[in-house]
Each structure stands twice: as structure tokens, then as C-alpha cells.
Image 1 (tube, helix red, strand yellow):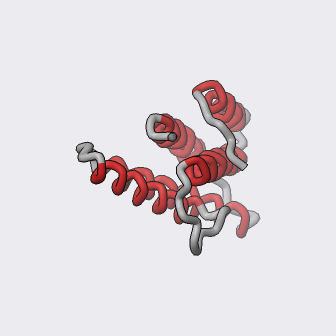
Image 2 (cartoon, one colour):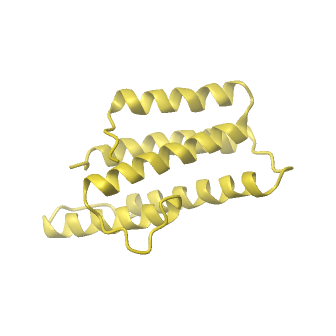
Length: 136
């Protein structure tokens, strides 16, 4: 199922994350950031018909790698200059959010702090805003 993303939908997701941060529920904020990336990546993958072989629909790190490979191929094909650091940033942040979220689910005593939750929120905004430019 493809979910159509726009700025309004992104802002709704971000305000839920902001609400969790304001309430001091940092683990929840990280889970919401993870969910937002998972939903957006899934939508991006299905909209752009990216091959899903060996891809777990819940693993945002793998999804980010497939999306970055797709973007690199598109940029090369269309001879569009691109910033490799920007694409590496997407995979790095996705990896951090994935691993932190898995720690939350696996360890009852894991407590995220405000800095980690804010990092996730800001980067989810940055990644999705960037990728919305390339959504077919």
C-alpha cells in the first residue's frame, strides 16, 4: 500500500514526535521517528518500484540503503551531480535510529535522553524533506 506523503503529513508526524519530547517521553519519540521513516521509506520504495528482494519491510537501515542506491543510479543516469555525503547521511541516521529503537524494545531499562530524541526528530525531518523532492 502506497501512502502519499506531503508537507502536511510530515508535519503531523513531526508534531507527534515533538509532543513526546515535550512530555519527556524520549523512548516514544524515538519509536515515532522510527515509524515515520519506516512508513515513508515503504511508500518511497513502492512508488518508485524498487526491487524488494531480500528486504525486510521493518528494517529501515536496509530500506535506506536500497533508496540511496536507487537515487545514485537515478542521478548517474540523468547526469545529475549529487552529494555522496548526503546519501551517506541518510543511511547513517537510519542506522542510528534503527539500533536505538531496537535497544528500546530489547532492554526494559534503556532510557533515551532528550538529545537523542531531538537528534532523531531533526534528522527524520531532514531526510523525508530531502526525499520528497525525488518521489515519483
